[in-house]
Amino acid sequence: MITTRDIAERLGISVSTVGRALSDDARISEETKFRVRQAASEMGYVGNRAARMMRGASSNVVALVIPDIRNSFYSTIAHELSKNMEAEGFQLMLSETDDDRMVELRHLRELSANRVAGIIIVPTARPHSESVKLLKAVPHLQLLRRHPLLGAQWFGVDDREALRQATAHLVAQGHTHIAYLGGPVELPTGAERLEGFRTALREGGLTEDAGTTELGPPASVEHGRQAVRRLLEGRKAPTALALGSIQLTRGVLEELSERGVKVPEALSVVGFGDEPGFSWWGPGLTTIGLPIQEMATGCALWLMRRLKTTPGNDGPYTSVSPGSLVLRGSTAPPDGRSPSRSR
Image (cartoon, rainbow, N blue to C red; front, top):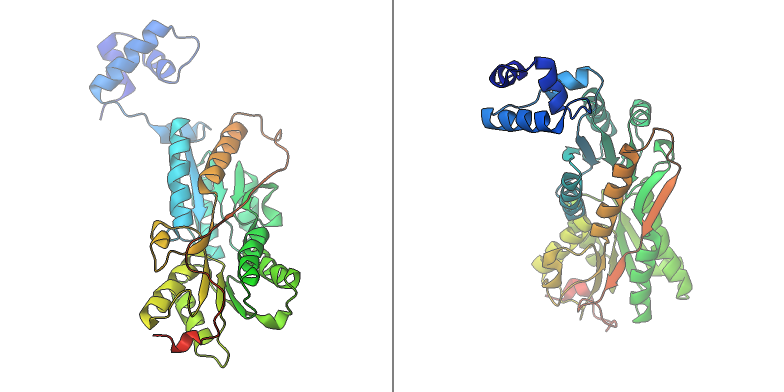
């Protein structure tokens, strides 16, 4: 393995001069820095980052802590963040918690021990008290979900307005029995989306009896399938569905396809998120588009600025991006037929 001593012997200079040149020390001339870097590249030298971290330096790694990489929102935002970070000389590291606060804690312990430069986190519903302490010691921000104990820096979507628009669209078409499938209210996103659904019913002059709710794990495709199965096989099947997560949307679409339910003739559907396949599923899925690129760019720019400023100089910061209702062919006025009998 090539060391700084090997480079020093080749160039006939001291080991300390090589070290300073590689760390861009102002005391070393640009000519010497160029010679050292050229020799290092030719000889295949790889810097010992662990040694530098032991001397108190942080890494150039930024961690993204998310519940589930299978969710296209998280995988797409990870891709966008990675590109933004790379442009600034940082590397993105991914940690997956499966919405388990103890897994979240283990990841945060390891990230802290490795002195990551910063953390972008989609927190669990009830982060462990040690997780809160660990995050306070490193530059971080919350993405999509916001927990009051984890700081005042947050980038999210206007979840309430997104579901209000989706449900209002169905109400405007004349639906009076609408079901909402979403995540648990313990998650701030789940609570906001449910409130948006109920707000649209009230604004449309409908009672709460007009809306049926099925709440469960937002990352579960199977929950989406089971929930829509229960709704279609119930005594009074809804004429429209408003969905509150990408994975639930996948499950619902799979179940409807297998059952041969005619959309929108027998059942209108508004999904959540806009995966590439949603545009050509059935008649094309009307859905809530999410501002993924805007959020990723905003997160990256804020964190890069934070890493370049003196700790403690950053105040509270909130960025709320609007979703957008993407209209396609999966919604229509109700015709009174039962979707459970439509094959």
